[in-house]
Length: 76
Image (cartoon, rainbow, N blue to C red; front, side, top):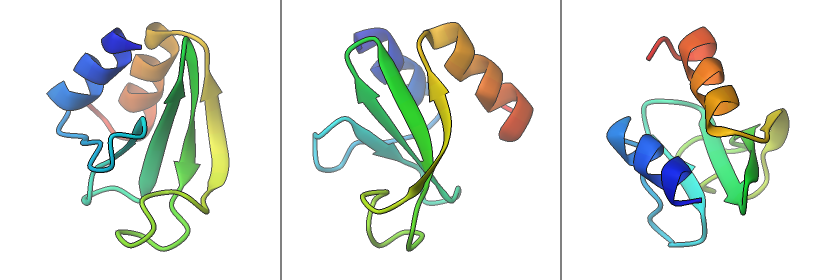
């Protein structure tokens, strides 16, 4: 999980609540991490709910999958 956290922090995504839910106010997504997997959700109320009620749009099981999603969808 630390690899995911380091990658997300390097892209300016933060976990304000320390609950493994990363957001970037410039993007309408939340990234939820649990162990060696996670999911990207579309935040239900961009900027207000931190992704707690978002619709899942992508699941990943490795850092490489998450990095590829970033490249394809965010351009970073």
